[in-house]
Length: 154
Image 1 (cartoon, rainbow, N blue to C red):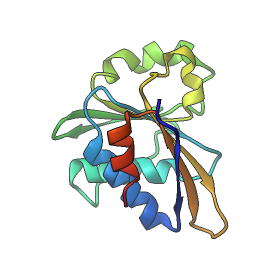
Image 2 (image 1 turned 120 degrees about the vertical axis):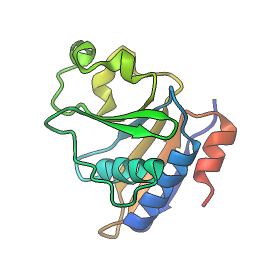
Image 3 (image 1 turned 90 degrees about the vertical axis):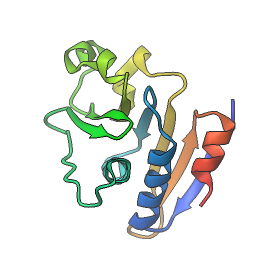
């Protein structure tokens, strides 16, 4: 297993650039687990990822906080953005279509709610606020070394 890589992201543009690199590297069957406290930038990362993956910089990407899942058509197949904050645990996953969603790319906010369904080979992006207002620290883990290193390369 590759050691985690930590990056300092000075502003939201740097977070968006990281998400765009992830979008270029992601492929059907990938899970991207977005971890961090409220306000850490999980939704901003997902929004930038989906805009880059669709090639539409103005794509409306609403937060799935209340719907729990939003689906998107990408050139490579489907992507599903899940916000599991309101989910009590993994028992509600079948109702959300988790198994079907896994055929495409899934971006999951609050992945701790997945329990044993969290894919072992998922990319884990842990975001944390840093010193400046828009600054974040991102810790990347889980992908194979070549993809993880390509993701971390600015």
